[in-house]
Length: 437
Image (cartoon, rainbow, N blue to C red; front, side, top):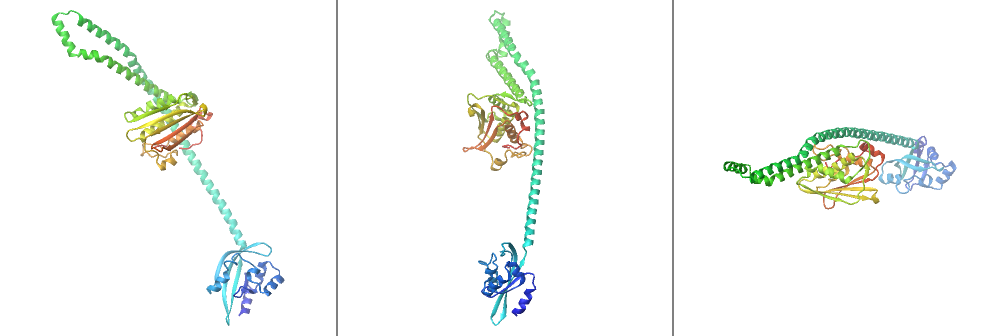
């Protein structure tokens, strides 16, 4: 039977070897000889000396995971794909190895191992894998570029829309402020005349009161004084006039703040007092704060004026302060600190609040464009994205965190001398962006 096996294996294109139970080589075919890389005499001498298969042609599984041994012990055929072996000349080959236990009778058992050379196929597969990986990476890179370009287009569109809205709003506010200014000036300018007229009229009444009047006229005069509550009028008219003057001054101040805030300065940079800008912003959001939120001012002395686009910088503080006010559900406080940094070469503005702080989801996305925690229709998700763009365009930084004792803190740092890119504010710098809401 062994002879029949030899004849069968001799014509096989796959390398084949017959082993005894101890893995000594009993027979090998021509394909096996070619695979080993040994000359015929060298291989024949090793086999004649009783060499084991792993001494003739070692595979990577020979020492610790011998397939022939497993097939022998299991009593059935086994196969392993892509097993590496090193030929005698040093070339690395890859085989599909199969092992079959065979009984020859009379208690003689052998193991037939075959080795199908798939080195070329494996190399082609590897090259294909490399090409496919390159193709996948190229496709992924292209998709990433498309996503980035799409995001940039969305951000650019949002920037243009916002700039147009702000420009229209600025013109509208400036127009309203101008229209309000005339009647307010009229009221404010005539308060003093009204006071003088009242002084004259009351003086006249006092003269009449001191004069000797006929009996009937005196009675009518005293009755008239009682009807108009003359004593209360004398006591209250100055308070009333003072209130009118204070109201007119307050209204004039609001109009001036509106005019100041509406002047975006176009693309021009100008020296700006940040403290005054923050005060203007606080005045404008006073309705959000009134009787509910205490404003704590921490303005250090010697804060330098900075060269910036004043309108855009004021917009940053408007966004942050408005978010802080809206985040505080009931009563609370907002603290605004301003101080010089780096020996007067920069200014830091820290805005803290007693609100609930920034949620974990919002913390990572807070300046992403269109991200908002507000209800639909209440927030666009552009406020802090625009604010960070403005700060970056001015060469500054904007950071945020949750304070240990509760509430959020935004810290804006601006250099005293803004770069030229700040002329266009949000249009400059790398887009990023959204809001407490």
